[in-house]
Every structure is written in C-alpha cells, then in structure tokens.
Image (cartoon, rainbow, N blue to C red; front, top):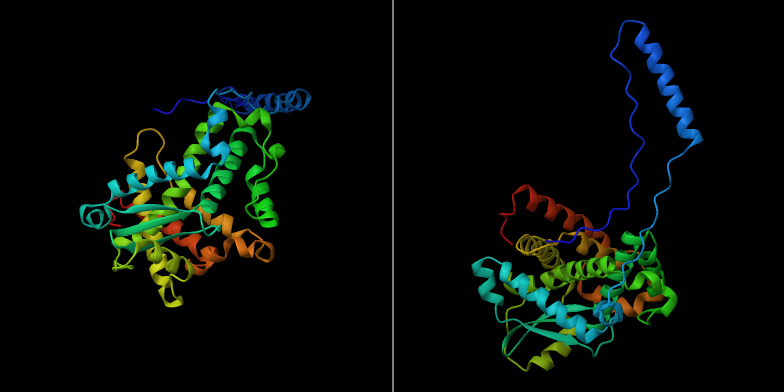
Length: 316
C-alpha cells in the first residue's frame, strides 16, 4: 500500500453554530455570535499553510530520475511497456506479446515511434523524450510537495535551451532528495511513459503498421524520418484513445499507485506550451509523426471519461 504522507494541512476555523431557534431571540443571539466570530478571526487569523520539512532518502543520489540517466530511464520504461502488454485483452496482446523495445540514442530528438523488423513489432523511444519526461516528473513532484513552480519553469528552459540539462541550482537541493518527492516523481514518470508507449503499442495491435520483412535497424532509420503520412492522422487519434484505455486498465491492476490519464495530459502540455520558434528542432520528429497537441488533449479526456463510465470494460 502507498505510504501516507505526513499531513501539512491547517484545520479550518470551527463553524459557529447558533442555539436552537426560539422565535425572535435566537436570530439576535446568532447574529452576535457570528459577529464575534468574524472579529476574532480578523484579530487572530489562522496560521498560513507551511511547506513540509523534507524527509531525506539515502537513495536519492542514485535515483535514475534525479540523474536523468537515459539508460536507467529506458530500463524503467521497459517495465512500463511490459505492464501495458500484460493488461491488454487476449487478442491484441497476442499481436504484441513479443514486442522489441529499442532505445533510440541516435536522433537526439524528442520522439517515440512504432515500426516492424524481421523479428516482429518494435517500439522505440528516444533518449530525449526520456529526459524530458524525467524533468517533468521531477518538476511536478516538487511542485506538488513543496508548492514550487519547477514544472512550468522547465518548460521555459526547454523552449530556450532544448535538451541541455538545467543548472544544478534549478531544483532546490533541500527538496531534491525528499522521500515523498522521489516516490511521486516515479509515479509521474511512469504515467507519462504509459501513455507514450501505449500509443506506439496500439499502432501494432490496431493494424496500423503491418509487420514487413527486412533489417530491423535499417527499418528504424527509415521510419524515424517519415513514418506517418498526413492522411494517417485518424490512426494517430485511434492510438491515443487505445493508449488511454490500456494505461487505465494496467493502472487498475497495479499494487499501490494506479496510473491515470494525467500523465498523458502532462506530455501533451509539454508540446502544446512550448515556443515553436526556439524549440522547433527539438520537437520536429515528434510533430511530423503525431497530431497537434491541442487536438489530442480533449480526445484523451473523453477516452478516459468513457472508460471510467463503462466501468473499465471498453475494449482497446
């Protein structure tokens, strides 16, 4: 079960209740009591909520998300992919059960894609996308725990500097090793990857990319450049919808934290709120092969609502 975080909420001022009404007397008493309560509250306002004290974790220095280490992040993402495959109904699962997961470190861009090789279906994710997801996870977890603004600040950094790592001082040192922040950032990271990888996985079991013969590495290089033609954007939206239902089903089967559509919306927001003039090169590959972000978010929300309303019985 998920460990309960120490509470940092401040109790609200107790509600003042008037005595039981006795004709005209009770309203007068009520008014006096409420007035006195208002004056007392003004003279002695409740303490403002305080940021919790960080709880150091000895493993923080080796945390792969804190380090934004692509190799370790890829290993974590592969675990997410296996959970997604296992959560699929029998028929689509049979089509992707032997999927090969490839770390694409050659392009230097933010991208993920599906393709086929001699051995069968392939899903690939770039180092750039893993690093962006790690920073969004760190920023989101820090913001939620310590009331900072690191996630939005990272989007600004990304727009100005691309995939260059932010300075060490970007994340407050006192917060960076907090136990609860580390746990939360892993949840956010995996939730983002569940959508990204679920989307690419869906291209295979929905039949968008029938497997072809040929050398897998040559196919990877070709598809990375120009995978999805303009007329195939409907297939991209279908893959988004299937990915949301897949990640929600997988989340329901997990112990502890259950994935939600929030990771999908965070990924989409990262592409929607960037400044195209400065970030164009970083996101070029992703934009060539995926629908515009502002069209994707409403579809993700709708798919999640339909899945929840159906009790999770909608097929992928």
